[in-house]
Length: 114
Image 1 (cartoon, rainbow, N blue to C red):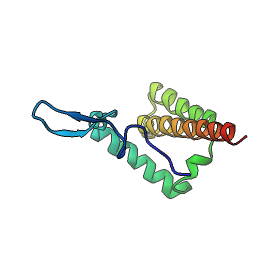
Image 2 (cartoon, one colour):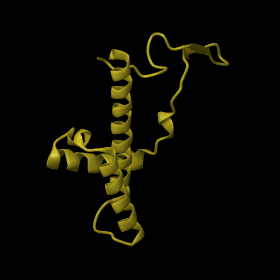
Image 3 (cartoon, rainbow, N blue to C red):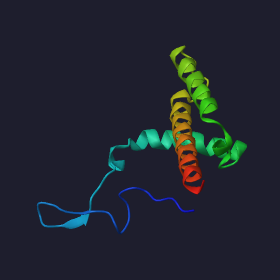
Image 4 (cartoon, helix red, strand yellow):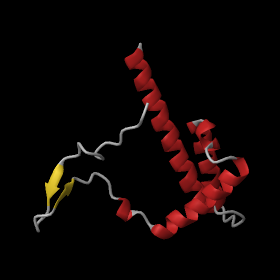
């Protein structure tokens, strides 16, 4: 089964700007992501992929991702500077969200198939 991203693709609504330019309507604002923060997060992603495997995080439950995220948050708040805690928080939050979305899609697909 292939994933469909809402608002992306040939069926996306078309909008016209004030100059008359037409394009697909935008539902997302990737331009608002902070590039420096993204680079810092992807350093942690690379380290984890090298150590555990690129997609290993997909085999970890949401609750475990949240627990590790909180560990990094409290370590950061306690003044620990031994790790890139904020970057780890970003990774674990993203992992938890992605696993949750995957679980929701699985439940939705299961209901449709039953």
